[in-house]
Structures are given as structure tokens and as C-alpha cells.
Length: 594
Image (cartoon, rainbow, N blue to C red; front, top):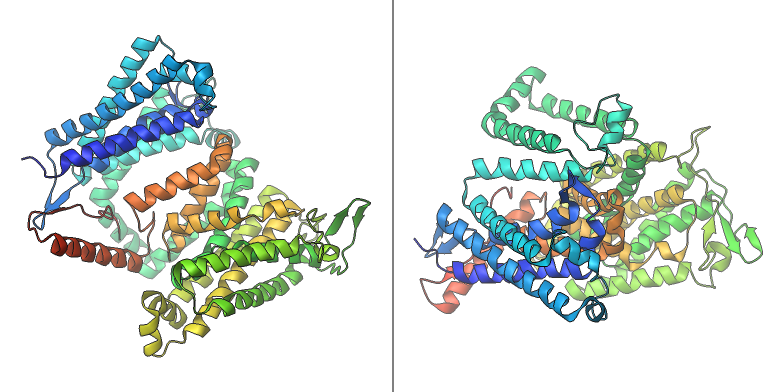
């Protein structure tokens, strides 16, 4: 049976997949990441992520089920394989045409337009062979990968999920080549069987074993997961005790992590923790109350600068270092409550003028407030307090006796404590009367006011609480870095924090943690990504909005809202066309969206 609308979707997905490969090549991502290997000397991060993944994802999306006359139709294995291969063929044809055009024009001419096109890049795309044989092999591989993506989509969940998790585990372990071998060394475990000492990526034996273990555990959990959970509940004496045991195990893992993984991972996790705090604070404003805030960097700056002044930071001047006009000399832990109160007050001051604004208008105004705050801290008017554009330095490391929290490992524990406290507060707020008022206000402000919810009060409360938690992140940033200047408080901080919330799932506390790990942790592990940070953020957000708009770990209520909206849109489209045979593509919310 031919699935209606499949041909149009195949062409669209093929064009998008080819565009993704060409764009990644033109901006330099493929050349930059090719030296980093994932498996052996053959599979690099560039080859897997930017040459192999686009045709698979394009074919996977093109062959997803469709709604035909109210019934879901899934392409069969053969049809999906053919459609996927056609997607790969389109991707390969356009990509090869672009490479051939670049070669025909000549490197010098092409580099005048695209600076990243180089002989090295073309050598990578030719698979380090002659142009004809290299492009032929690459074309065949792309077509086969497209067919694989289509077949994968047509398989049942019981087959598809273990394969996806197994392959993802191989890629993940390959990208953690700077972390896992260090942990194995510290534990005294041999690593030559798992990681190549020459290319640093996984050995082929290690890759096969990683895939087999990950896929096997997935199959086991899918088949025996409920029985295992019941067994754990029985052993611990009840569901509440089982959850407590899970929390204890998680805390023990988090406490042991710096000693196992080393200083580099501790440094990265410290930065991730700061953005987790920022994300938890912004999640209250955006995820709970539905207020789009693009000026969240203001609270980050308030926490950092006030902490620096209160704890004894020094101004940087042309004549050397000097104490600011107001020099607190307080302990970090005494100054922190003052910082939190100041940030809450700033939140109220920012929230009060925008009480009647919604949506895009609110976003624009809060963006302006964020820039105003940054301008004030770096202005000559307050230079005697905050140091102007040169900023502050010699900020104390929040010492407790001989314990120095600027050390990456001890700083990790400091951040961890505040992240746990902030997550607990956010969780309690979500389940409280205040959280329900925020949800009602986010759904429909007029209806919420009609039933007695004071939008003024709860909006101000959201800004105050969100700002206070964000200021804690700024205070910890000041402790971690030890010096501040205007370069640390750009609009990119607000964009990154909002991206974390959206990626993880608005209103979801675990989603914030996952979003921070993806957007802050992965670039920290792969330093080559730093130059392409904004590009990666944009690509990740586009993919999430298209494939999983509710986020990676969504809030259940938010997921239901998106389902209802999608059904309403499909019904509206059908009524507008007035045709029973209209093909409405379902939302990619799909499976696993609870």
C-alpha cells in the first residue's frame, strides 16, 4: 500500500538533509572535527555527526506515520527502505553536485565566497581517495544510511529503541574520550581494550561491546523493567522507600564523580551547575508563569557584581588595584542572603512596569532591561563601585577555613549543594498553590483573574523568585572566576539559559539539568565546538522544535497541552479544506512523550 503524501515528504527531507551537510562543510565544522575520532581511525566525529547523521534523520522523519482519514498509516519495511534510499539519493546528489561545483570553480575562487572550503575539506569529502572513487563511495554510503533510517522508522519500538540507544551509546562513549579513560586510570582499570591509544576513540572491539551491552540492557529493561521495579519496591519495603533509595544512590554517585572523573570533568560540571541554577530560575518565570524573559542576564550580573563588592573584590584601574567605594569584606555565606534579597528586589522592579505586557512585547521589554542592567554595571557613573568596563578582580573564593572553593573539585560540591536546594524549591513551588496559580495564569490570564488569581501578585512573585535563583548562579560564577568584566554578561547568557529551558522542556526540572548538560557540558568536552557555539544552539533548538517540541524530558502537563493544540490544529485544517481525504501529518510528539 502506498502511503499518501510520502513522496512529497521524501523530497522535502532530502533537500533539508543535503542542506545540512553542505552548510556544515561550508562553515568549517567537518574539517574542524575530523581529527577527533569516535571509533578507530575510520569514524570521526565529523563523519558520524555531519555526514552520516543527516541522511538517517531525514529518512527517519520522512517515513514517520501519517493520519489518513482519521487513521494512522505506517509505511511498510520495503516502502520505508525505498523511501529512505530515495532520501539518501537526493542528499547524495545535491551534496555531490555542490562538491563538484566547488572543485570545478577551484579552491581559490570558492574560498572567496566560503572561507572554510579548503583542500583539506575536499580531501575529507573524497574520503582521502581520488575524486571519482571517493565521491562514489560517499554517495553509496549516504544512500545506504538513508535506507537504514527508513527501515529503522518502520521497525517496531521493541527493535528500534535498542538499536538507537546502542548506537547513541557508541557515539557518546567515543565523544567522552577525555573523561572515561581518565576515570579508568584513577580506578586502576585497563583501558587499551576500550580506547585506542593512537586515535583516542573507541577500539572496534570496544564499540561492538558498548553497542551490545547498551542494546541488551535496553531489551532487558523493556521486557523485565516492570518486574525489576516491583522487585526493588518489595526489597525496600514500599514505593516511597524505593524512591528514597534511588535518591540516595544518585547522591552517592554525584559525590564520588569528581574523584572518579578527575579535574577536567569537575571544572565542566561546575560550569554546568551554574547554568542549571540559571535554568531553574528562568524556568519559574518562563515554564511555570509563562512570562518570556530575554533579559535574564540582569539577575546573573546582579548576583556576580554584588557578591564581588560585598566579599572584598578590588577595582581594576590604570593605576593598579584599589578598593571600591563600598567595600564589604563579608564572608560569601553572609553576603549571599543580601545578594538574594537584592536580586528579588530587582525582579520586582523589572516586573512592575511590564505587568500588562505579554508575549513578544514582554520579551522585547525584558531584553531592554537586561541591557540596561549591563550598561549600569559597566558605566562610569558606578565605576567607583563596580569598576566600569574593567570590572573587579581578587574576588575571594568563599573559603571555609583552609577549604578553597576555587579548586574545581571543591567548587563542584558548592554548586551541587545550591543546585539541589534550588531544585527542591522549584519542585515544591510546582506542586504548591502558587504553582497552580502560575499554571492557571499561563493557560489563560483573564480566566485566572476571573476565578480569583491575582496576576499582578503572582507575576511579581515569579520575577522575584526566578531572579533570586539566577543571582545565586551569578554569585557562584564570581567565586569560580575570581574576576568580572562586561564580557561575561552579554545577551548570550540570556539566550543560552532560555535555550536550556526549551531544550529540556519548559516547566521540567530534570529537563533543565539535561539541557544544561547538552548545551554547556558537551561544548566543554569538545573544545572544537566553542567557535560554533551559537550555530550548535540554533541547530539544536530547530531540531527540538520540529522533532520534539515538548523538550527532551517534558513536563507532563505541558505535553498534554501540546497534544491538544496539535489535535485542534489538525481539525481546523480539515474543516478549512473540507476534504475527508486530507492527509494531516501528526506531531512528532509521538512515542515517549509522557
